[in-house]
Image (cartoon, rainbow over all chains, first blue to last red; front, side):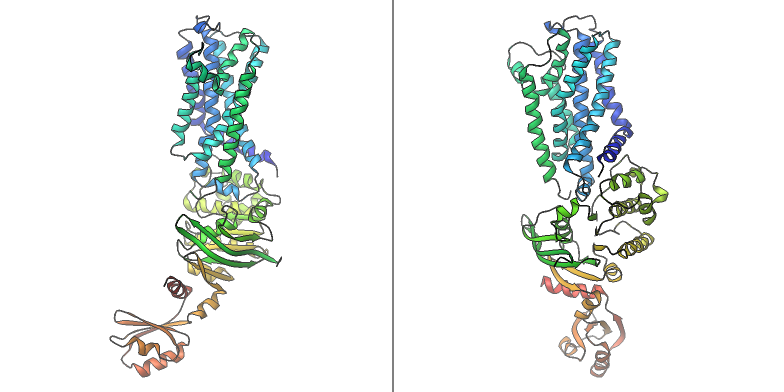
Length: 245
Length: 297
């Protein structure tokens, strides 16, 4: 059995869903220009030493790509609604291949979202050395792994009717508490909460520009922990999910 | 017996207080076409879900070609058309069938399946643009493309019109002729009668009869006599030669016969006032009502 065919068609399906793509790419871009545009001269936002265009570029790239990863859940919920998960279960398709196709598809949309925000960033004057772009990009791709497993878990736990608010709410919460809309600094309760959220570390990728050298070991631990936790939830939810709708 | 295709032994499954299946024993040989027949709620779909490994039974075992159902599925030995279910959107019919084919070790060529199921003409259409009948054909194509040893169909003709049904069964017969094992659930009695080698009748989660459809008819008498005969005691009719069962429907009586020739002679001798007499061959429907009625009592 070749998993390539399955992955190719999963990608094709996603690309054919124009409305999904327009919203996925459009919203972060619009928000970026609305928020960062008027503050483009701000050189150190909230005392972080990071310029507003760079900070919000990473913030909204995090927002958009998180959403793209979690949107897997919406696709899965729609499939479950028509009983497609049960149909797949009567085939030799393995759990591994199924997960792989879902994750690759999610990453394809997320990467496109990251690239678009990077282009938008340069429009607003973000200039970085090539290796900083790469470093930031890689950190964000790793930081999205927990959201890949989270998307699959949501898709198998939530119905098609409630998946919209579930994903929208999850993204909004993670974005807010992760520092997408304003930098979270200092030592308050908000800061303590943010530290254990994967979205915080996504946004922290911006610190590469300060020569900070990426995440602390705590960042890696948080990302690994969330990934593992939701991988377990997703696998269990998928295994259980054979009932008639 | 390793030659057995499917062996279900003592299967039971409950959903809370609802006993969907209460101890089912069914054996299907390789190459056999068997109908699982019964009204809604008889336990057909639950039985099929267990057979496909989608559901674990509370008690009993299911094996497919000597393997656990999930192992048979993993080897690509099973193709299934489930009762409820639609198609995923944003793929063309041909693409969806090709995607499904890619899951199996030795699938049928996509073009052959499109031809067999009469879906070549819609191969280029997106799945969300199909009618109910077209969707059903495509779902059949998805089951067939597996080129499975066992084909399981749960009420496959529900969304089809008369023409669609005839084409469907023609295709299925063609597939059966390749030596495949086929199990289909239906509540269309004529379908079981016409297309199955054998029928397993289910009611209230139990098997109430299992045998060749001809045998099942013989179980409850081969013909029915209906006559207008007001105010004639039923007990006297039931004692007539060749009558297995008598019941009253208003002014009319219906005699289920084990020997209708003897019964009609006896009836005319005993009750010369009988008029509007009809003698009809009992379809599977009669057999079915009789058997499931008794099981419920």
